[in-house]
Image (cartoon, rainbow, N blue to C red; front, top):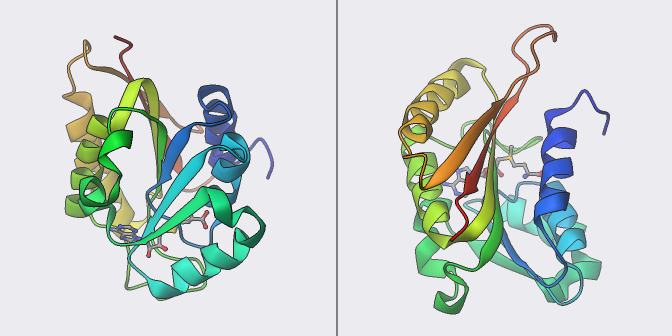
Length: 189
Ligand SMILES: C[S@@+](CC[C@H](N)C(=O)[O-])C[C@H]1O[C@@H](n2cnc3c(N)ncnc32)[C@H](O)[C@@H]1O
């Protein structure tokens, strides 16, 4: 991954926000690359919940994390039902939640995140995060992704400043429509 990738930027930020032993959430497991990164960040005593609605994605993530399985909880459910699947003891104590929107690379492109489910998931993530916790959402601004980006931006920009700081990371000198990221930092107590 090079510094011209938005994932490089968000992983760098997440590395600073997560410490060994933390509980974190990958809201879109996909092929498991972000789950592996998060599992490395939390170390052997931490926990990563990895959500996906697709069995092939969970299978790919299980393979990618096979040597880290003890710290990864695969959840076959949508992130819009996150609160139903996170241990109540972890609610309010999660260090980071990561959404990497769109479809499964190499999979069925018709199965993708939607504005409605993403916004529902993001709202629940903000409840689940601990004070000072970090929410990251990577958006792809192609056809459908543009609408999802706009709908999400509207929701995020209306979060009161006393609750969270919301940042938008964009490459302003890349060709086409490069992916971007929202980073939300919940206010400390
Ligand atoms: C771009 S991929 C994620 C890439 C992944 N983080 C990685 O590192 O490989 C998006 C994933 O979101 C999943 N997805 C779509 N809607 C979802 C939902 N409501 N809840 C959870 N996952 C969802 C898709 O099945 C797909 O696997």
